[in-house]
Length: 300
Image (cartoon, rainbow, N blue to C red; front, top):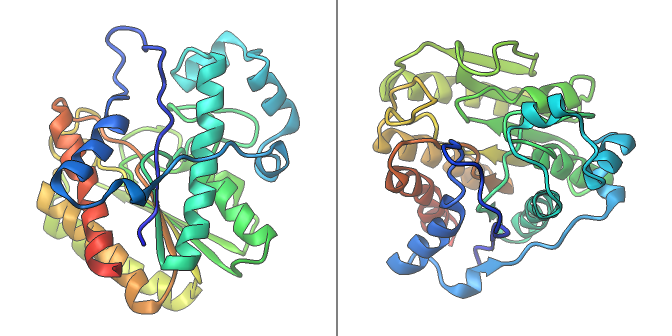
């Protein structure tokens, strides 16, 4: 059965004009239920992570300062969210959702998180709407408990996974692959194991050709036995922050390639949603919904 971590509801509204579309986290499950892609039984409420697991990835003092709301103004500004106890609790639960979804992926072939993909969080700081790096925490969990021997973190958000890259720069058991807009945020890129920077305006055909070639190479050379997939939809041509030119069909082709690769090779895959900043919330929800539909079609 497809199991999907729900995003904890963040009840405190962000400042007016904030560009992060929080409403997608409630609208996406509603859409999937309405169209019959899933039923209520497919969803689970994620549990918060213990500090011990968070500390496999993040600095002790950083976690303490987060929980005590003691970050500096500059640190809060870099994250982009006003700090509050409910926000920190939400982030801990989101990371828990990715870990739990990975456990379901091991059992069923695929597991999913309506939220997550917080790839800009570093060892001792956050940025770009990311506070704790759920991808890195999940990879470290899988390795700690010997659920996997080699993890591929496949990051197809339009923004480079800079935090993830630094967290695993010296770890041969995790291969980080980020395909992103070359001229987009972050302006100072870190070094993933494989970085592919795309030109502004990259279209469906160009994108898919590059992804297909490089994904095959990585799978052949690295032979991962678990995939963590950051499936951000800010690659859409409608995205206000993306600068690429993928269509909805192009995003679907991208997700199909990734999921079918995992399915055909018998590799468990955990998918988390990442970014999406189109002006119309419907465009964001439609793009995200496709990967859930594909999961049902390909795995169940």
